[in-house]
Amino acid sequence: MSATGQQNIIEVRNLLNAFGKHVVHDDLNLDVHRGEVLGLVGGSGTGKSVLMNTILGLRSPQGGSVEVLGQNTQSARSRQGLESHWGVLFQNGALFSSLTVKENVLLPLREHTNLPEKLMSELADLKIILSGLEPEAGSKHPSELSGGMLKRAALARALALDPELLFLDEPTSGLDPISAAAFDELITGLQSTLDLTVFMVTHDLDSLYAICDRVAVLADKKVEIVAPIAEVLRSTHPWIQSYFHGTRSRAAAGGAME
Image (cartoon, rainbow, N blue to C red; front, side):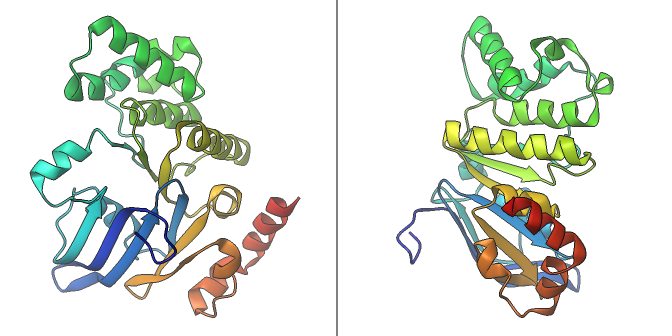
């Protein structure tokens, strides 16, 4: 439970991540509240994806602890149980190229459930539609999809098990502004409809303004601030000033207020 009385779905405490002598995170702390969309932002090399992978248990830190839904993600047994409670959209989609979209969506259902094949097929079709794809996209291979369609196909797979926690790694990277805005709108709708908690690694200023309840800023090997964007904008930290008060940020802020 957070100091404000909100339930924490993720708790990171005193995290240390290093590659050899290169320290990426040192004494990093972060809470993610149930039901929020949290955007994680930081400069190049600050370890945004490293932090997400550590939370997911894909990387073992050199120190500290990570709990998701009250379970230690560094425990193989706990992580196996947690995998059915979260969905992950990796930066490049990470779809299996030899499988169709529907076959990709079916994978987590087959791995984590004992549902009848017919029901799994129907659920996969539903998740494909929920992700904003046409039903016929299910029979296509990833190589036949546009960049925006690939993101949606990966999202459909991430939603396959009806997760309560959704991880998104640069979900709008490589998309044109119209497609990126449509994807933001899709995430907002799904978060509300499915009661999701969303942890989103991003550098997209428009996304930060449009859909994030709070923004966590990685700087100086830790989370410098985590707060609603209006509060983040008041920070005097040099990187935050540069990132959030530059020309592009002013344009994003202006668009968000229209």
